[in-house]
Image (cartoon, rainbow, N blue to C red; front, side, top):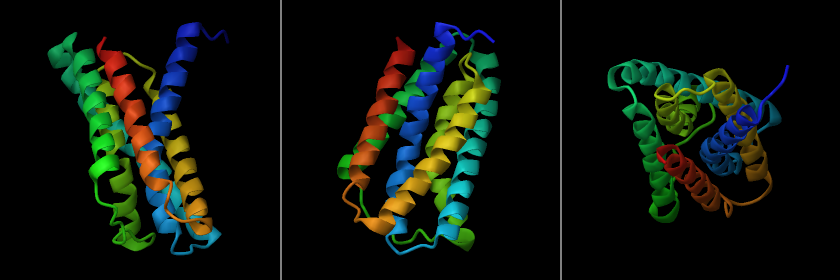
Length: 186
């Protein structure tokens, strides 16, 4: 199977966006992990977040495909705009947002609310990907894998150290989404 330069570029773009989306899971995972979780809980939370990081963009892609049939060529600009706004929102939250995250609990309904909240950004990205002609299977798979791994790393790091890295992670994630959103609009 011969992989072209364009396919590698798309894969690297998806990987960077997956890392950007995983920054929320990573930074919130640090805070949640500071309560002292067992390894079994870390795995359960990480898998749940990974699944949500796959389901949310799939839902967004379905809505985006429907919208792209209605709006045509303007769809790529709209998708890039969504990524840009999402990046700016993450940057804003990283700079000026609150740091209160004690309501997030890694069990029961709290686990699903936690996974939903850190995967909500992936819904918007999925919407923009539904508006564009990209390899959606690769994107969604990477989002789930990277989101689950980054949440696990955040939970494990949170067990070891304090929350000093959390804000910087969200800033970096927002910057990456902003750059790629602008790139898609050009």
